[in-house]
Image 1 (cartoon, rainbow, N blue to C red):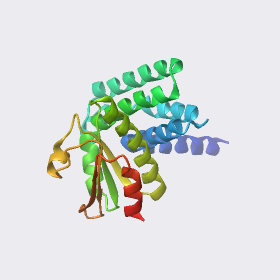
Image 2 (cartoon, helix red, strand yellow):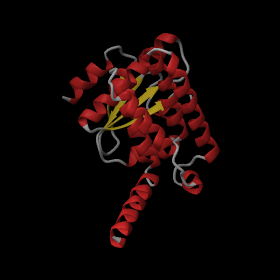
Image 3 (spheres, rainbow, N blue to C red):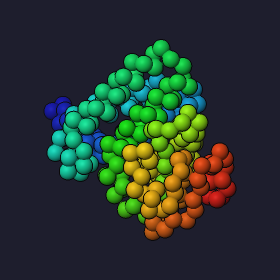
Length: 214
């Protein structure tokens, strides 16, 4: 019986350590899943939101956040506060309005982990998608960004592609580097970080991307 108890403790510790060591990846995967299911009006979306909240509100190590993820506990707390406001607001609004607000939260998350995600993205040897969204623009552009963010996430998950979504309003360095000065825009990279294909401000972006990948 004592041996079983120790085994349970070890499993719990192992799961805790694994989650803690992948703060960005765990939250990003949960957020993407919720975003996709919310857009599909899936009955799983409510459970996905609970799972995302559980991950977001774990007790993460302050030093790890600062050194590995290049952010601070105060900045991370601001993301959690933003989530709380989102969760409170969606009780009284439509699913479509919730998508608009979650897109803003997701870009806040992206901004918070920008420098870590930059290193992670370009160190991957997978084919990958760099998507430029924006948190500030006219209604039409924001709507297109939200819609194509969801479509891009869905396609990346289906085809097992790497991806990184950037808020180009806050970070335009890579837009300038790759001469992609519109949002939404997308660049496909191969495993050696060579830019293979670029799509800028197109309503049918995902169709063009799918055709290229096929």
